Image (cartoon, rainbow, N blue to C red; front, top):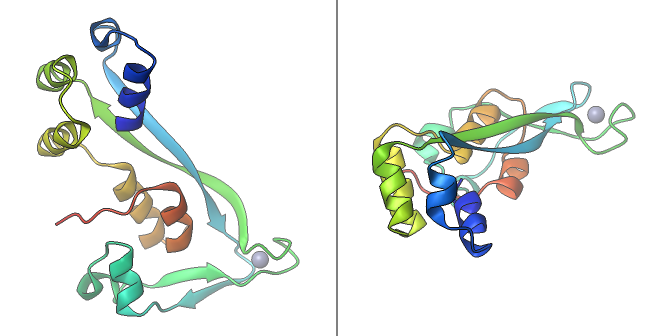
Length: 147
Ligand SMILES: [Zn+2]
């Protein structure tokens, strides 16, 4: 969502013009789904979890999977895609921040206070559910520490 804001502002669009016209901003990415035929449980060492911004205490208990690659998936380990998304609700407070051209980090902080779930969290849900891999979501979402 912050990308979207940045893109509008860089295009020279007056913030007022789009902020007043929108109720919310949806950001979506596609991640590949692990192949059913070759999915295998994997265990990552703590430093790998930490490098992905995950708390090892919490995540070492979560069963994680990867596809080994087989005939069904042409050796990729993935078959199909699923969407992850985040929705920024343009509340009055957020609108004002955009109009004031506040830094996106500040807007994100306020959005979080207002209950926004970010792309990264949506992606982590897919990992937790065994649908996709940690490496896959690290390619499409930023690693951020949630603490
Ligand atoms: Zn496969």
